[in-house]
Length: 254
Image (tube, rainbow, N blue to C red; front, side, top):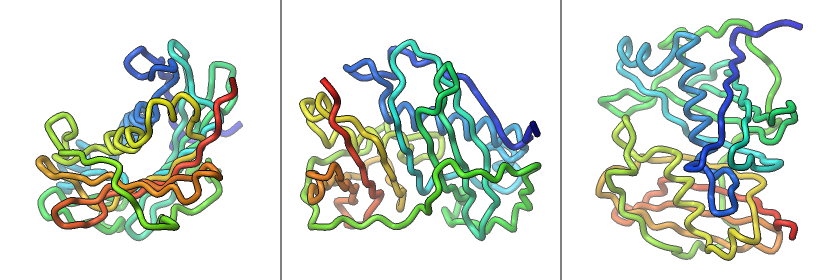
């Protein structure tokens, strides 16, 4: 079997701080694992945060991600996450993920799109500027679909407001993608979390949110009977959409 240099694997141990009251991995923690692994894998290929930052004054920014979940890992469980890059497009860099349990069974899959953002101008840069050439590209897709724009089927209603503060901000000076997942999950009640679990989520990150900004977390339940909910974060001051998401749920078996 051919060994692909661009395919990278890492073991994660699900710790107590990574799980919720059901002792299952929090969705935000899974996104954190993906972010960590993407960073490490990019470093291994020579296109990491420090390499590109020092040479081109740019940062990696996640703009879209979809995760399909068969089951969430439990507390004290070991999992293996695999990742590989896709062939770069004009401005987007794709990266896929597979999550396996200790026996090798696939329990989650993800696809994602990233861009390189100039640190000063905050403008997206074209991929050809960087001459990124991945060795031995692994052609398989984790999920065979395109990451498209998300549109709710009815008018959104405000679920709650969130003021962006110190703990929400990452090394790039804006809200980290994992925090948006926390905002999404906080849009549901404790009782809803007891009864349902996420089986798929797509999140599109559209504009930056900065310290002091206030987000309106808006929710559409038009398709909730079919297990589908849309949630958006909208800037209270400028009314611009910061992120949009679509979630599919399934009822937890008693």
